[in-house]
Image (cartoon, rainbow, N blue to C red; front, side, top):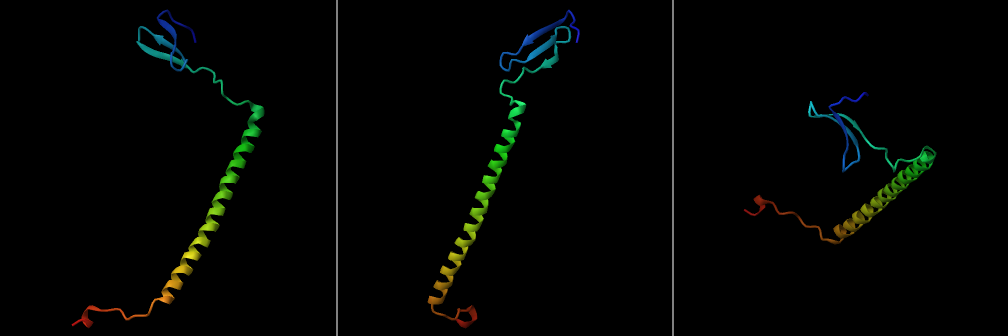
Length: 100
């Protein structure tokens, strides 16, 4: 892009982006972000993908174990409630019209 006489090229102090400002229009006419320093290399892509797959598998296994344990806990609670219900005496429920 050719530069006009009324254009200034500035660097943003916070993000280090290159800005081209037209003084006649009083607007930014071009914006170019700086190169990232933390971008991964292409040869590291397989390692990154493998690490993410391993993390997903670990999370899935953890959720499977939690679900299996959840069913056992519910079975224990049900058995305990059933034992308590068998120990309580059977009483006839009172109804409002029986009290008259």
